Structures are given as C-alpha cells and as structure tokens.
Length: 249
Image (cartoon, rainbow, N blue to C red; front, side, top):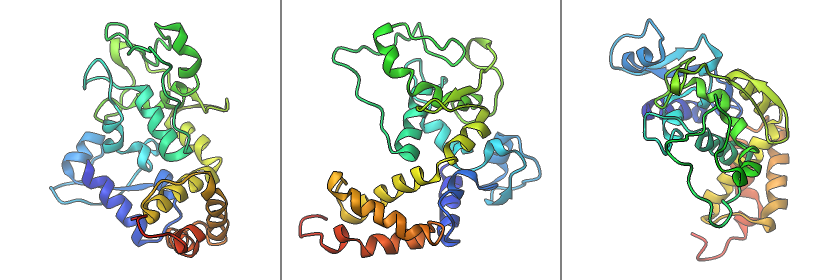
C-alpha cells in the first residue's frame, strides 16, 4: 500500500503535474496483490506498474488504501473505521484547517457506543457542537473499510449512508461527490500545499507573518497552473526563504 502511494506521488513530481491531480488522477500503481484487494482484474505478478482506473471512487489519494488505512483509527480497534480521523486528515492536508482541540474534561467515546455514519449520533451531547462540523466531511469514505476495501455495508451490518457536507455546509454524496466538492475550491488546497512546502523549506512552522508570502507564492504559481516546479521556484524566491537566518534549519 505504501509503495502505491510512493510511486504515485513520484510520478506526479516527475511529470511536474498540477497538484490537483493528486486528488483526481485516473491512474495508480498496482501489483497483482493490491489489484485483487481493490477488485481490479488484469494485473498479474508482483511487480508494480501504472494502471488506468475505471471507477472514479479510486481516483487520487482518497482512493488509496495507505491513506484509508492510516486514517482508520477507532476506539473499537483496527477492524473499525473512524470518520473523525479521516475527516481530520482531510482538514489537515486539503483544507489546512485542523479541528479544534477537545474542551477540557472531554472523554473518549465509549467503545460500546461507537459513532458511525449509520447512527450519526454522539453519546455525549456537549461534544456535538464541535463534532458535527467535521464528521460529515468523511462520511462518504465509509464506503471503504479499515484496510481500504470497497463496501456497501458497514459495522453492525447497516447500509452505508455516504452523504456528507463540507464545514461550510455544501452537501455531497459519495466519494466522487466529496472529491468534486473539495476541488470546487482548488486554491484552498494550493494554499495548504504552499504552507507545507514552505514549512519544509524554512525548517520551521509558518505563522501569520508569513501569510503575505504564502499569498504571493500562490499568485506567482497560478500563472503556470500551480505546477510543482513553479511552486518550488516561487518559494525559493520568497522573502521568508531568502531572508531566513541561522538556526532556522
């Protein structure tokens, strides 16, 4: 699973692609074992190779088992998925808007009363105000189980309800609907990616003082469809990178 994602991202870098392709590319890298895991036929042998995808549910990072598995942490154990963990992953890596910290004294959800997209209820009502802002973001991903296999029935043998919404209220249905809703504002992801690349380049976190530079980097890269190489060059020319001081690395 990790090899698939590594080869996929490497191909994006080599092709100097538009970063949005990380989320909607219609191909991936599979060997026979992983293809069988995905229900894809015609891939034989242990070697990984580039494979076109026929179903949009598997397009880009949201359809890859490595991402789906690492974001499946749940109090009930490794066999269960977690809309909260998957939602926070999207918020962190696409929207650039981490969820707020739990209020003081908040307790984990009891394992005997798990939250699922089928029940969509919280046993602790004081938590509801916060959780309802980010849980719906990942409900469509419940069509993937804890190790990234496609399913239509979830825990408790209940049918998956794959409808959800963005934090701002935009509704969607299914994995493709989630992807389309996210990509409706590509500048949001480009801004998040810029901040992460700048963090790596500076060797420190970015803060409000770097906001003008982030906006300028994004504007500079926009003229070239935000290609990875253009983003990197814009970062190298930015004031925070040019004026970094000893100790930043």
